[in-house]
Image 1 (cartoon, helix red, strand yellow):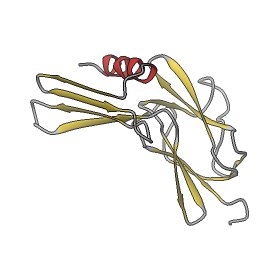
Image 2 (cartoon, rainbow, N blue to C red):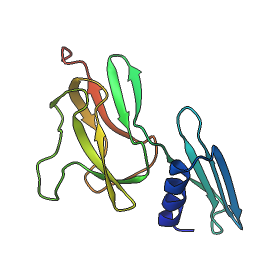
Image 3 (cartoon, one colour):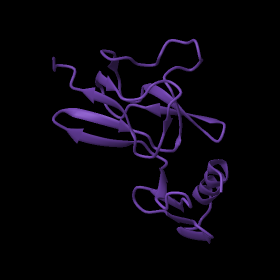
Image 4 (cartoon, helix red, strand yellow):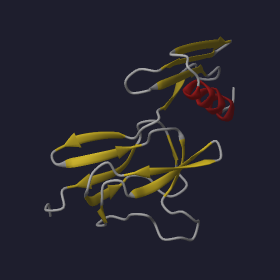
Amino acid sequence: MTIKEIQSIIKDFESSSLMSLELEMDTFKLRLSKNKTNEVIVKEDQKEDNKPQQTHASTTPKVELNNNHTMIKSPLVGTFYAASTPTGKPFVEVGSHVKKGQVVCIIEAMKIMNEITSPYEGIVKEVFVRNGDVVGFNHGLIRIGDANEK
């Protein structure tokens, strides 16, 4: 099963009234559940090395507070873009001041550009991914620190 087919199933599931869904085909198993975090888990056994491959998706960005830092994590599987156009200026860079609700990046999934916004105000301390990188669910994207911190 391709990633595009998986993403299509996830999209259809999210827009449906179903609360859970399980799909099993040969070496592929998909289990979707609408719980508090809207987490989706996909497992596929690889015949060559027999190790399961996992992909996750969610509808809202995850944040993690730790020592006055906020981690913006990917809410879905897709391609990370730092700017709105290939030659455009990045939305944020290390040292940029961001406001709550400000767009910090775009993640493309299923040909849809999803704007990821900052849930908090602060200074960008670290950007963990490069433009064009593929990211998975809950993958750390950007660390935001307190504006007063050096």
